[in-house]
Image (cartoon, rainbow, N blue to C red; front, side, top):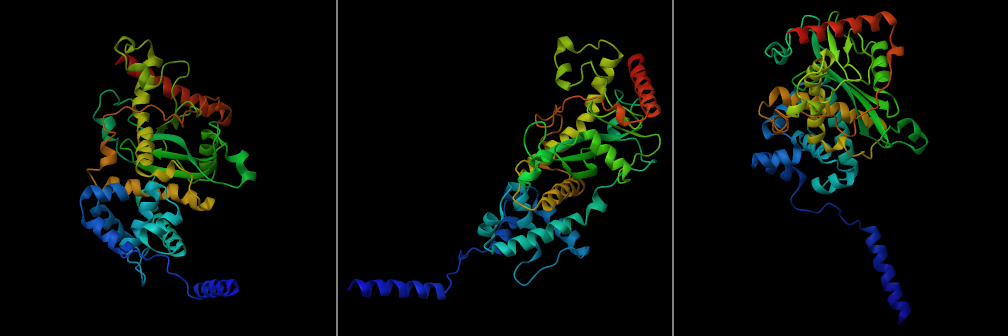
Length: 377
């Protein structure tokens, strides 16, 4: 009797092995889910994909026109794009995306990477370095606190540490000063919080100045003659990268209190104006990280893919800024003065040794001239 029962159980088990059981059986498919969200209340699209339905369709059309995205037998372009946007917006793994959109893990992975590369194909169109003849930015031109003193400023530069997953043997190279594993990403931003240049993939142990110098040496980043960017004290002060004075107040919170608002000297006033303008890059990073949670949580992808995701997020950031005027994430920071993110604060180092004596002298003369003009006027 027991032998018969055991044989019956074994037989049923063998039958189940021969007939695979479907895994994705939910009747509400991923295609139906996407179409329902895009056609539904605008807040649903924002909550899921971090942009409006109209902007998603503009992005899809742009990618199709460039022949960077095309429908397949089972997934149309809307669903492919939304799989990627949903993943980076909520820092979701392949398995979770497979369950949400009811596709196999292989299908999700393939289309996720296809869309990632498609968005990167837009980089040249949406992340561009300014030329020497670019106009003075309206934020400077229309504000007497900044014009004409900073009329040659193109934007602001700062690095940000993005969590990453790397092999254990590489942990020392990627461990930053906050003691977590990260990549150091350098970004140059305009004063309207859009990205002009992004250098991703540097080890977390690399200093901001080291990353900047390397991008200049390889020719990928350049500053037009007679123009400059604003940088923090983690960089050397030169004629192309103007830093604040050390030893004087700098952070915006130091000037917020009415009793401490009066400027003590030329360096104090210069530092305040410098911080007010350079705050644009802090806001840009703040907007980006609020929109895409993948930049706050290490993604379980190959390292090269993790680097690509950061650049793709910056491309999407600029795409939204250009095509979606009334954006929730841009608007929530309007009028706010952001101090440096706690994760971004870097100890001040003397990086003057990384630049020549002549360049350092020209930078000091330019900074002193701006500070004196601010003080006299």
